[in-house]
Image 1: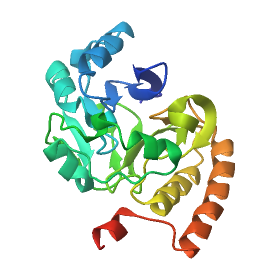
Image 2 (image 1 turned 90 degrees about the horizontal axis):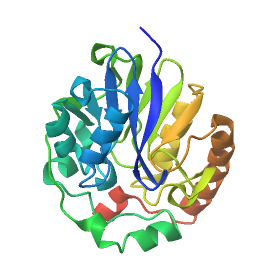
Image 3 (image 1 turned 120 degrees about the horizontal axis):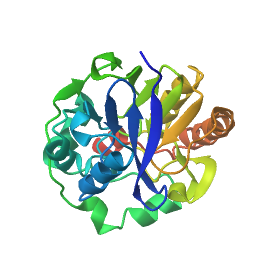
Image 4 (image 1 turned 30 degrees about the vertical axis):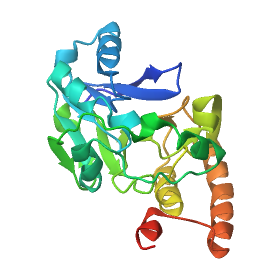
Length: 252
């Protein structure tokens, strides 16, 4: 099978929120952006010389509305099936992200007050229900869906055979993508240590680049150094009883 090419599709700003177009024998879209951005993604796909009707699959990396907000619209526009993980079915089916959001820092605390994050969007039912590692050869690209839980229970990434990791919110650029090339947490994580474990598992596979939902591509070695520092920071917070997770919140 031909190598898979990864093309960013900006949804908001130059790279504040990204979807991705993966080109192989057939094209695949990863993520569907915020509500009302389906037409924008559709037109950008066409601008890259791809007939949107040829899209074989729309992969949704997780159940936050800046990633699945236009999934139903994009499905209607392209006719392509939508794939999502079974552990994030609740937000997909309800059209609402799980709440409360658990901020990872000041940016998350600020963004949690944004009413747009708490709105109801058009719900959808995944046509392809992901439960584990899933080969995408039948959809025309040399790549695999990899479960990467932590950011949300059903977070997934796409790893191409060439080593490109389309990582959703597994990691981000600082300040919601405003500082390119600098690894950071996205504004929220359901389970920070769980997400970090997923990130380190993916790094152990030696990806060539990490293509993220917020910001420009990240170099693996720089992400490894950041992840080592983050592990120490989170371990200290956990030992001090200051690390909150969604599972802990649900038992309070």
